[in-house]
Length: 443
Image 1 (cartoon, helix red, strand yellow):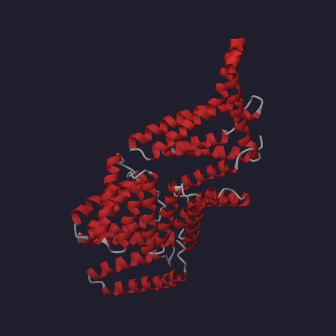
Image 2 (cartoon, rainbow, N blue to C red; image 1 turned 180 degrees about the horizontal axis):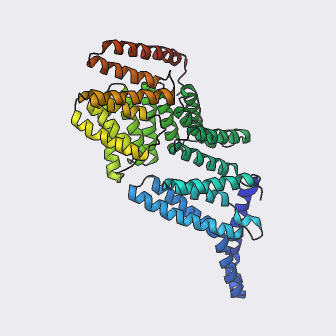
Image 3 (cartoon, rainbow, N blue to C red; image 1 turned 120 degrees about the horizontal axis):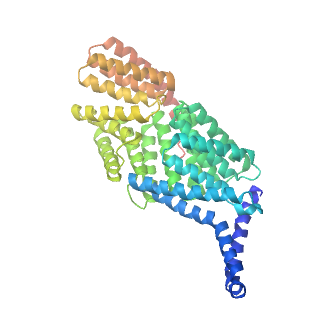
């Protein structure tokens, strides 16, 4: 079955079912055993597509459900779709080949459920084998299915902190899609992944350029892709944040929230909490601590309501909550939230993630406020070392860390050290301020 002919194969099955339903009463009246056999046969061949429809519904429900509801939806969906894939496997040895129409897409759906259930090891093994099989049968597997598989592998590599590997998969996906003149939505999805991988590798201008292309493509491609548009704007907001363009980051994050709320029918979901967490983060960088605290509380309330009591997102929200409280002088509350965030991130965040520089910066500021100079100095040193190593010597995030560290040094009477650090921060930011003036914000 040629991949370009797969839609017609599905049409053939649909036509056969319609023809049979038209003739069924007549055949039953003439020879009931034959009619019963045909009933069973056509039901068997139609079953994978029917099961797939149910699994898509469950995936959609799970995206907006509570923690418990999400797990139930994804678990049931995984069972249903795995059953469909098993039937496809049996049908694959039977002629004609159109009986397995849509089989690659059903394999991708299994991958989606495994990823959603955070069965990372099992998902990686399954998706790696799936992509290998898709590549071996590239003449019969739709491009969208192969690109989806590569996208999942990129996401897993991100979760493991293997950013170079994630970039390799994302670039391969984008190259495949561009060479095939595929659906612009598929291209945008690949660019969203590229934006994320560039961010983690400290490639600021590349991440912004790719992020702008993604949101521009989706804005003009299909107004119904609210959730995907929201992810694109969310990633672009992160790119602007790493470029120290916090106003633009805030603008993108608010757009992301609006799109996510629209996609969920006005409900506060786990996805909305992600965007609110980012808004809180950018408001902290802008020094708007009361507003940042308010957004962090909204995000935390959303997670509590939905039952998400653990995970990287919750740890990030608690970090933003603690950072806001610390800046507002509520040191004890800040200590509780920042130490809980540290425990959560130690459990869920890859050790190679450059965001550790932000975690250690907040802890340095915390222990500085607690007058524990030795502990504070140790965390500041860790923060600077990670930013230098993972983001680069001239990264705006490093300049921000320098500025906060310099203020702390001045508070402890180390003015000479503070002056040297402030000079380094100023030199970095002069470069990025010039780039910001040259950059066209196309959104």
